[in-house]
Image 1 (cartoon, rainbow, N blue to C red):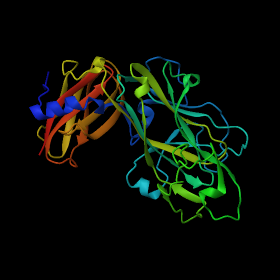
Image 2: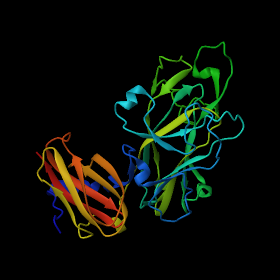
Image 3: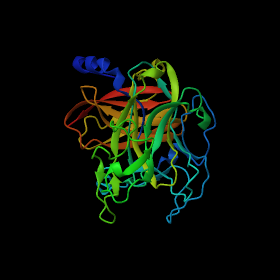
Image 4: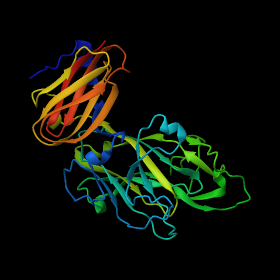
Length: 347
């Protein structure tokens, strides 16, 4: 072993008390997701699949003038303010010029093992526009396999534009009908922008077509304690425009099978201490999806990168830590073979 796991006592106690902050799944879509995502391929119905899938069930032709893909696709965030911080998102198109049939675009995660009732799902989403032609979507869960027919549990529903009820009224959300219908609670169902937040004025349009800004959302996964699940973002809209999701993250307690153990395989971070760039070097015993994370002394996740699907053997990645404050951190590498850790010091 190149490194051993060393913590000062205070750090060890803190991290032990916040085990529910383990990163069980993460993708920020900042780099091309095709390295770990099967695009245009139907999920095969596996019970422990470590690949993501993007699949277009409906096969309806694109009705936009832009030649958009039928499945979820990698693209830039829609709102100008998001392009300053979001390097990439997954987008999906519903513009079909078909006022009857819904698109059915599935974005399916890798399998996630939920140990206890501490797990939570976090993500961001934004429609291209709202309220007119607002796109909706659902967050679904399968507790069995990743075939699209297996997603029977609904965790979250974002409503879509249904109709403009009175064109003479001001361009307010009260002028529109949404599906599901809006209520006094803007989160049940969720109607993006109805509470007056996470929108931007589009200078090329009017107030009926505000730009959607990426909004953070969270749901509990406590009901899946003791199970391995798949999570799906289903875009099932009728002829509107575009939806996007970003920064998909599952936090929880790491399973015993991937407990923090540096005896799993060779893992090194150098130089250490470092002030700018570090090199993460590791020897994978088998092909695996790889996530590299950094935690501060309170157990807070301060950096996470999905390194994608990688072949077995020696691998290395360069990671910038220039934005971190000086201090002691825990570096963690998660793979299908196990999770390994080491202490790093930022000068």
